[in-house]
Structures are given as structure tokens and as C-alpha cells.
Image (tube, rainbow over the protein chains, first blue to last red):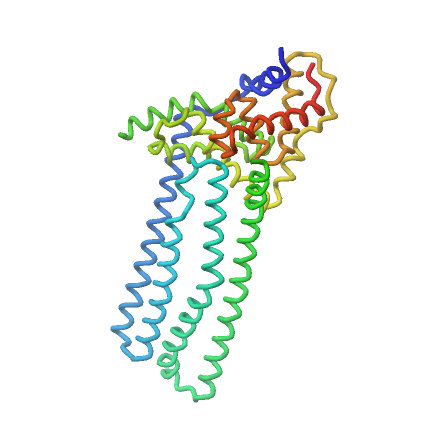
Length: 196
Length: 170
């Protein structure tokens, strides 16, 4: 017997010990998971539609110019972000698991790099539009409380600073996560290419 | 493909490849409790991609591509959570052997040794050696990994030498 045969015998010798589930059991698990994902998607779509309906309804009930401009800016910001996410979805790796390991790693790396680019390049635009929209909308809302000009200005500045800080740390955290994801993939790809 | 045809094909594919895939999961995760999660995740991907199988290669090669790609990403997720080392620690060390007399126990021990060595290899080497042990051809290994066939043989010899030095086959 050759050495390779010995190793193969050891490797496959474990099979008789295995107590693996039957195909029906695995399929049931897969279908349960599909149902769960569909339920989550339906929930997300519903909450998204509800948000727009509520926002739309308030513009009729509260038809002040700055409030409407503010909502439009928020809508623009959200649409911009959704478009970028949808665009990136096209490059998603979800259905490409049957590529060769090398192509699969490259595709994943490109996907993460694209998401990183969205975060660094477009997230500040989204944040600026959102902050501008919220501040514009609040011009009319704060008027209702009868506060003086300085007080209202203070609230706007305070709110803006708070949002800028939240976005700054949010983006920083996202970039760190992307780097944590991409570095091991790059390592694997490099080791693979070095051995070509 | 109708749903019934898909289920029928899945059943056949699953029964023919479940052990092969389970061993692949063990090669990536040792005896961690997450082996079953990875196993399930691979067959979820197989189910999702089943209709895209064109028959250009053997179905076992196609499944191995899905399996190794899923394992590569799964392992990266684990590494990020700092669990990789923990699962590798669960494997017995190469030095702790030799006492078992029964054949079954000896094969078990040797399997643990082999698994422990495979777990310590780089991802690419791990994929190659598990494919060699499963009996895949050089061409099939190249089809899964994306390496050139001419390099597969050189690579296999290098890995086998590393393993030979550390494992005692009796």
C-alpha cells in the first residue's frame, strides 16, 4: 500500500462513524431558513412603506414650506443611499459560490472594496443631505414652540454637531469592519497567487 | 426544473456527498460545534445554486467548489470573532498518541493527527490536500482552486512532505 493510500484510508475511515442527518431533515432546515428570511424581508418592506406613508401624510397635515423641503431632502438622501446599495447588490457574491476559489476571493474583495468606497466617498454626502434636511424641517417645527432666535440656533448647532459626531464614529467603525473582513481574504488570495 | 425534480436531485446529491462535505467542514473547523452550522450552510448554498449546475464538471467537483468557498468565508468570519484558535485548540496534539491497540481506535487517533495537521495548513493547502485525500484528480483540483494544473502536482508533493514528517502511519 502506498503512503497516499494509507492517508486516504485514514481520512475516509471516519465515515462509518458519522451520524449525519437525512436529506429531508436538511431540506426542512433550509426551508425554515428561507421562510425566516422571507418573513424578515416582508417586515422590512412593510416598515419602509409605512415610514414613507407616515411622512407623506404629515406633509398634508403640516404643509409648511421648510418642513416640506426638509422632507424632500431626507427623501433624496435615502433614495441616493438605496440606489447605491442596489447598485452594489449587482456585484453581490450571493449567487457566485460555484466560482473557482481564486475568482471567488477576487470577487469578494472587489465587493468589499466597493462597499468601502461607498462608505468613504458617499456616506458624507448622505450625512450632509440628511442633516440639512432635518435642520430645514426643524425650522418650522421649532417655530411652533415660540423659542427665541438664539435658542433655536443653539438647538440647530447642537443637533448638527451631534449628528456629525455620530456619523464620524459610525463611518470609522464601518471602515474598521471592512478592513477586518478584507485583510484575511487578501491574505488567502495572495497565498494562492504566490503558488500559481 | 420543477420543485419536485429539484428536491429529487438534492436528495441524490446530498446522499452522495454528505460525508465528503462533512470531512471538508472538519478540515476547516476541527471538532468545533460550528461544524454542523457550516455543513448546513454549504448545503443551503448547494440548494440555492442547484439550478445553475450546467454539468460542465462532475457534480462532486461543483459541490466542492461551493463547499470550499463557503468554508473560506465562514472561516474568515470565525477568525474575526477570534474563535478560530479556540476551535483548533480542541484538536488533540500530534504528540499525544501511540497507546491505542484496537484498529478502530488507532484509525481514530490517526485521523485526529491528520486533521490536526490539516487544520494548521493555509487555506489553499488545506483545500488541495483534502481534495487529494478524497481522490480528486489534478484537473479537478485545478477546477476548484483556480490554480494551474502544472502547479497542482508540485504543491501536492510539498504538502505531503510536510504531513509525512509529522504523522506516523502504522
